[in-house]
Length: 115
Length: 109
Image (cartoon, rainbow over all chains, first blue to last red; front, top):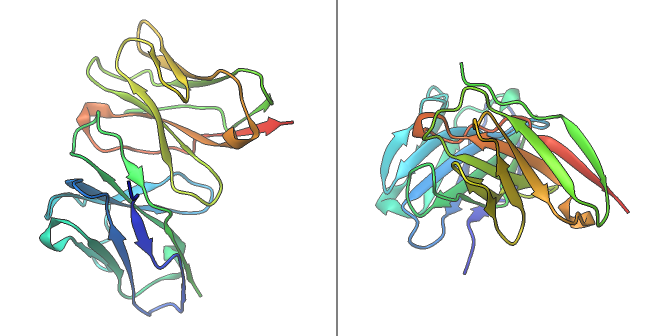
């Protein structure tokens, strides 16, 4: 079974530029998550989708971050414009469904460096 | 305010058991306790989860205290590939997973 796919794996941009990350979850998984992991810290949830609807985006900096999950499958996360403090690994995860008993499967992440 | 505490780091010798503790004193009766681990340069991976009873799977065992205010992840025979950051994640009020800093486990040959 294929895992969660993410691209690109690495990205280097200058501050104030825009960047987009792509995630393809495990087939059949209804719930998709985006996390931000700053070096030395645990992942922080940015947004959670159930199919193509947003369940929780309370920690998403909406002035610069946006995400969508068209057709309830793939998802993109965009940052516009990027700041130095956005340097982090962006992780995508998926689960069969929402609910606290569901195991989340994580992708390898995209490492973003903002110069 | 919900609070989870784990030691910042632990060391173990290869092929010896490892007990990773976690305190979650504000947990309620319906909050699941999940454990994930993150190997270097990888995304987190699920290890085990439980509610009240002790749980076993091929990776580890989870021992949950009777009052549920603490739990212990047990790796029965640590290998070098078990070196990782281990996250204890009680899911309070059926909300989303909130990762803390975790415990960095070093396994010595």
